[in-house]
Length: 266
Image 1: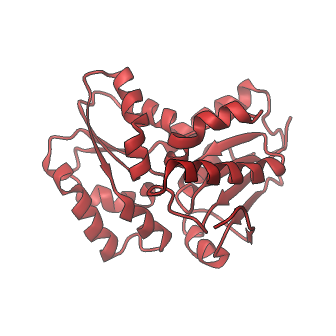
Image 2: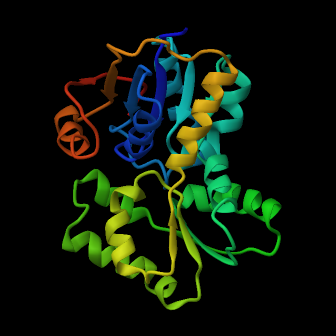
């Protein structure tokens, strides 16, 4: 039995879609969620900056004695995953490999739309892994940076988000696409609007479910599951604007208090 918390890290609100799935599949674990709201979005930033921010966030979570690190951010997974698995001595789980498995498990997909941040698209991490699994797969990748800002501003479900989704995805709708993967953890917040806009026969794939499944396997294989059934706790930390974060986050997960901490330079 190991009641130390699992650390979950994202640049902002988006990683809550992963946290939500973790709480659904593994309800008996203690969790700490950290969002770098002072410096979101990460997607347009240089790689060196993303790596530095990631190191600072992970240092904070390590100080909280976490037993596993979940990088609930595709951008950070694409840029910093290799560094983190080599430099910290606890299991590290990103969202890209689970996302790739979700595509491979989804059935016969010939053409896949991939929407993500600029950094994730340009890293080619998804594309290279997907091609290894299916060399004949056609991938149409699109950076959709404004969708991150839409979610961070709490504008999901509005006419503004509807118009931006239509602008980004019009040619996806008009193509013979089989599926689309939400390769940014912010985008599942907009899933209903994306589904409403796309044709019904385009499958929408969210890596969060597969990420939680993989985390469950890691806990069991490493023998670090929390055996307690009661009194589990989830703590939330942000680097800026705790009240704004809480007002948006409470629409996605149960949340009481949000602690604001100063980490790194802004």
